[in-house]
Amino acid sequence: MRSSFIFVAIVTCVVACGPSDAQESSPVEQKTGSLSPDKKWQYNCGEYASGYCYPEILKARTTDRAVDLDQELSVNGPEARDAEILWAPDSKRFGFNYSPPHAHHTRFTTVAFYQLRGDKWVALRQLPDYLLGRRSDYLPKGFNPRQCVREWDELKLREWTDANTAILYAPCHGRSSDLPAAFLLTLKFDDAGNWKIIKAHQMSEKEVAKIEKGE
Image (tube, rainbow, N blue to C red; front, side):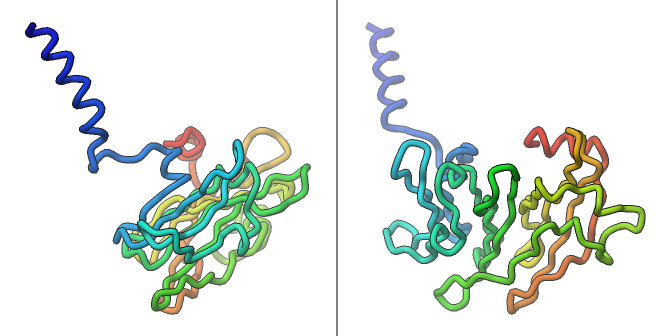
């Protein structure tokens, strides 16, 4: 009798208790649905066919669309499943890592930033393609951008350190499987949403390996 009671209690808790609100969502859940820190906005990538989803920003707990990311950024098809949103801590900006249309023999990932003005989300100035392929003041003098192939261009938002500061991961892919170099770029925003790269940290092999493993 005692064992039957324990079994019923366990089953009841599994069905009714569910996951705790404090439990972090899985990586898949974070990619397909994510609430802003203030709980007012929600990223959703609703599946409309097997392996295909439609990325958008909604007013939380409604179907009111605030940003049509598919329409604005041309991100659709299977690659939309790999897109990812990262909210700024104050919920006034977000960065969207995605893969825009590109030639079949190339790989291209970039980030789009949006800022909330009033109750409307506005796209901010885009970062240039082939960011590491440009000679810029923020890159170290010993770095040769020609070693980065244009057929594989990757730029991703890694984290927000505060409401106005974002850290980007920018690997330099070469002809071989090794990375000739990789950088963490510090992006600073002003109140109007204008950004500037203020720092570039060239990563060690150990740092790159941790990121490539998803750590």
